[in-house]
Image 1: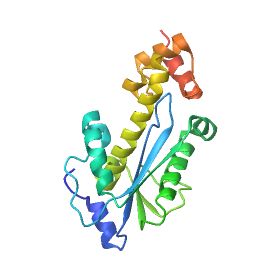
Image 2: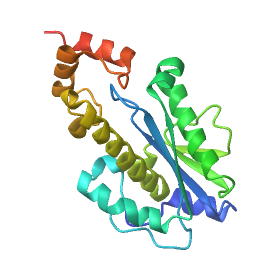
Image 3: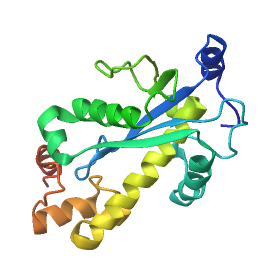
Length: 205
């Protein structure tokens, strides 16, 4: 992604000069929170070379880009929804909550939000939703990288206390090693019990 997208340029041309790119990570894992980032990149600056959908980048590339993106941003904030909130609200509701928290923390420093995926009911701010936005829109890609780096670091830190599940390698996703850890050691407070039940049932021999 070498430049701002046409979507972002059109939004600025329509008077929405400051765009808050919003993305989340952690919808699918068996453990850990869902984390969202809202970020406003300077509209008159060129896109940072190498920025792309976080899923298309290596962990090393994401870690390299993270401080560059944060250093360039006009505003950047994170929001999360806990495992308990995920279980209570379901993952869609918890994702919305995480995005709301991120947007609230950057205050009024944006004109419109640009969100990856479909329109978010109840988000509470004017927004444009773009399916595949993390691969198509520069500001959303920046948000996806920051959110991914933060969540991966959190799961790596939790892995030091719970080494059985190999979260430092799988970030809480349902890999074979993680499933094996659950079978031998049970669930922690950081596991999403409803997700784990489905994963365990699906992995029965």
